[in-house]
Length: 190
Image (cartoon, rainbow, N blue to C red):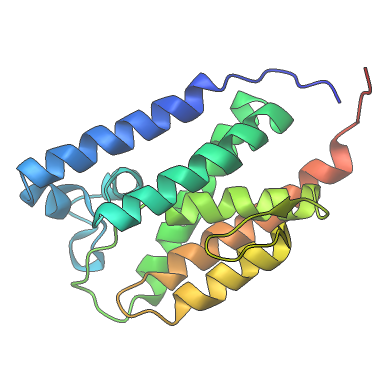
């Protein structure tokens, strides 16, 4: 398969922005409130629909998202090209945030993280590469990607203080986009 329009630098750039803002929130925790998505203050701070994608709530949160972004993002940017990759990433994150705004159980909870965007990437790959197998720590055998993505979504949905709405929005967008891309992608063998 020939990869066209791929620029893996964009994945590294997203990771760098996330890491820099994570460090900034460690230095100045009030940035979480300024850049995180809160339904009660959304009309006063509409930029948080996008900025919350670059803010994370802890070291495990950012590590999980950035490792997944590295693997899923690198593969998908090579598969689709930079432009389509970024469209999926940001549209998945934004749709997830809109779903969070509509279905949040608390108007004052602040949602942060790139998980909606990450689930969008996972959704696209699940449809476009259904036989792809991945390792999920600590499981010692490779799993079909769709089992890993759906399984992690279901498990995380039961954790308290997890914005499952954002994960669901990103995943749904990714599955739909994956179907769209799969139908229109031509495979070129070199």
